[in-house]
Image (cartoon, rainbow, N blue to C red; front, side):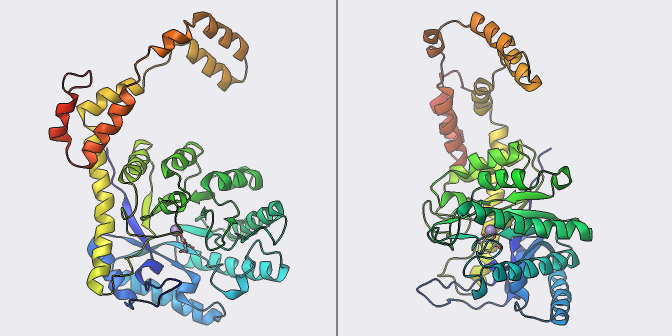
Length: 412
Ligand code: GLT
Ligand code: MN
């Protein structure tokens, strides 16, 4: 049964003021406007950084009080806290990095702040604790040996994970990947695949299985490199490394992180492929918007419109997934793209999985093989037909569009 996903949003998106490095804030909306907008749009969860709620040097008492106030406030709008995260990038003390800084005093500050946030995450009932390592990188590799920097960063997170495990907290710890920004050159473990391999290397003990995962931000943090997020997504799903939520928004490819509203500046087909792959793989998770209204939006009405658009855009993608799943032309195309393997190929694969008998299996396959010329004769036109039909579904022209398939083997 098709299960539509639920929604969450970063609390910081609701109060974002529209400033950029060259311009002052363009709006000043109380968080209540955003929370009310979430309730109206059907967003059920909201997430916070420690620093969204109190100053870094706040007393324990102040923090406890703020936690209570925040839980009360979100409850008034029928929302609950989904993620908690520690801000290791805004305070000027982290200008040389945080968990990875070459200065031990700065690393100490990062550990103190992050572990304090691990306690708060538990108090707030957060389902996940996010580590976004924006400052864990370099403006030009002048700081330290880059391998050592990575080790410091991931071992810093490991301190926090162990701290939480020893305290018996049951939330998941996630690394949010972004390859550069705010550092100019690179962040350590800045792509989904590099973070995934770092987790394997630094968290080998099975006690960590499923406890430290990756939360990507699609398409922003991948499209900013000019890459297509759906490839990274496939890897994370295949490796069981995908967190139970993704961040979602809009991004112009090959630009700094835009955090535009979903769909704005993005590729509609890539967004569809993300939504489709998550559903095809029966991923059970939540879509957390990490994006904001454009700078030209200044009033409450615009903020609420942005929230409704964000939810509506994702629901539109899911509607397209439903059409795609039930489309007779797509099903014929898909049948060609998902053919069963020959007995010989199956034997090779099972030998590889068993770890023995590969040579014998490849020899049998070679014997049954016809010729490269014969293989070249295979008809691969289904691939192009596939994208044409997807475009028709996405643009709502699939009814009249079906006519271009008439007379072909994919005709309904
Ligand atoms: C920052 C970053 C986001 C992260 C936030 C969590 S902070 O805005 O660009 O993608 O999710 O720390
Ligand atoms: Mn994010």
